[in-house]
Every structure is written in structure tokens, then in C-alpha cells.
Length: 124
Image 1 (cartoon, one colour):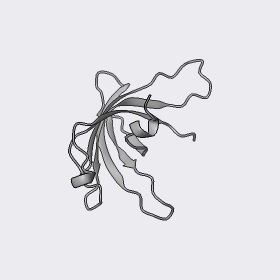
Image 2 (cartoon, rainbow, N blue to C red):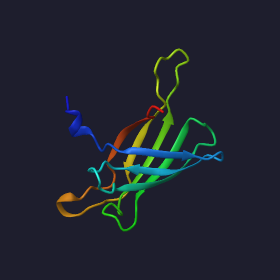
Image 3 (cartoon, rainbow, N blue to C red):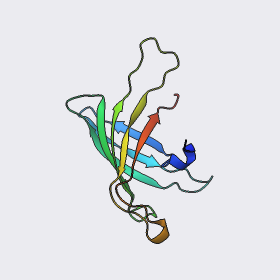
Image 4 (cartoon, helix red, strand yellow):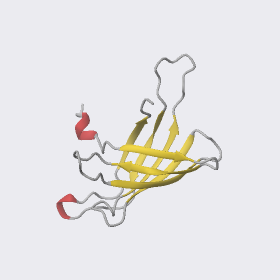
């Protein structure tokens, strides 16, 4: 059995806005030390016209930042909300693809890497 920390791709904060036409925008924000400016990827995408529980979006590093070459593609679903569930939070689940290489030399992260993702809505 692998240690989760060896399997973990990243732990980010997903900030999403969904418009009535299904357009998705937002950011994937990396953790940062207190007082430091966090790095972020801008998110653009859409909710599926065929199923309002399906979505896809792309995250790209912001120009002029150390992660400007980041490009990830996400495909997911809104998980079921149980009618009799207690304390349930809205959750998104799906897969993510590293769509382009980023970094170089020993820090090269090659395109093609995939992972599962979960995004759980905060209280509030």
C-alpha cells in the first residue's frame, strides 16, 4: 500500500463561480506562508449541456509567475447529495491531466500525468 503523501498530486484551494449559462471561472490557489502572495492558476470551463452534474475546466498558471507554464485539464461530476444525509458537504470529484510539461531539468513535471481529485465545499 502506498503512503498517501507519495500519491498526492497537490493540495489546493478551488475557488469557482458558475454562471447561469454554465460558464465556469475561478482559480486554483496554492498554499502560501503567512504574508506571502499565493501562486494561482486561472480556471475556465463549462458545465455539460447534457448533464448539469458534469463539468470540465482548464487551470493555467498566471503569466509572469513561477507557475506560468502550468496547464492542467479537469473533468468531473458533482457527487450525489443524499436526501437523508447528515452534515454532508457539496463535493466535486473527477480526474486531472497534466496537459503540458512544466519545469525543467530535475524539476521537470512531464505532461500526461493523471490523478483523481476531490473538492469539498467549506462550511459557510
